[in-house]
Image 1 (cartoon, rainbow, N blue to C red):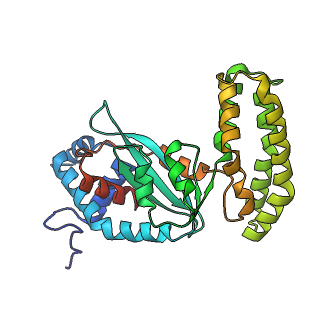
Image 2 (image 1 turned 60 degrees about the vertical axis):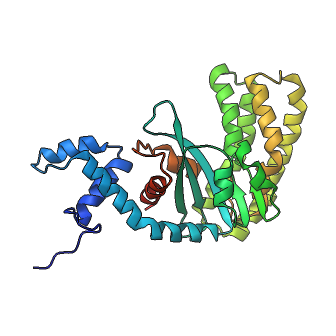
Image 3 (image 1 turned 135 degrees about the horizontal axis):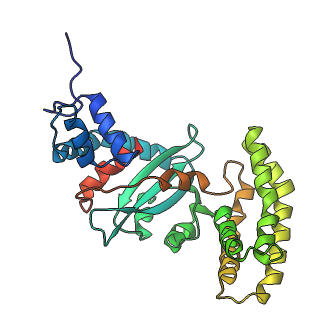
Length: 296
C-alpha cells in the first residue's frame, strides 16, 4: 500500500491532520495547547510545541503560493486595503493584520500581512509597485499612497455613515442631524443592493451611479455644509461632520468606476474575526509564514 508523503519533511503528520490543526487555530481560534490536550484524549501524544513547529513548516511550504497570490492581487488594478489590531504573545503590545483585497478577481482575492506596527510604511512597502485604484478608510497612514500619481484613492462611505450612526446610537434623536445624515445616505445603499442583485455590468453600474447616486451625494454635501457651522466642532457629531468633509473628494470617487465598491465592508468583515496569538510573532520570517497560512 502506498501512502502520500507528509507535506513537511520528517513529520509523522499527514495533510489531513495538518489541515485540521491549522484550521482549528486560525479559523476557530483553538490554541495549540488545547489541541494537544484534545489529541491526547485520543491517545495521540503530541506536544503543543511540536504542533507549533508543524504550523511554521506548513507556512514555509505555502510561501511560494502566498507570493504568487500577492503578485496576482497587486496586478489587479483595484485594491481595497484595511488593517486591524490582533493579539500577540506580549499582552502589552498589539500586532496588526493588513488585508489586501482585489474584488474584481475571481470573486475576490485576498492576502494578509502580519506586522508589529500600524505605520503606513507597511502598506507603502507592499504597494511599492502597485498602480490603480486604492480604496481605504481615512486613516492617515494611507495619505502618501493616495498622493502617488499612479494611484487613485477612493474612500469608504460606510466609515462616514458609521460615525453618524454612533452619534445617533447615543442621542436616539430622530429629529437630529445624525439621523438625517443616515437617512440621506440610504438611497445609495438601496441602489447598490439592486445593482448587486441584478448582477449589473461595470458599465451599467457606472451609468446608474451617475444618474441616481451622484444627485443624492450632491444634495447631501450641500446640506452637510449648511448644518456644519451649527455643530460644536469637537463634539462627536462635529467630528463625524469633519471626517466626512475632509474625506469627501475620496468618498465620491467610486461614482467614476463601475468596478469599485461603495465601501470596504467586505474586507473589514473578512479580517474582523481573525484572532492571532502567535509565539515568536516578533520574528520577520515567522510573520511571513503566518501570513501565508491565513491567506490559504
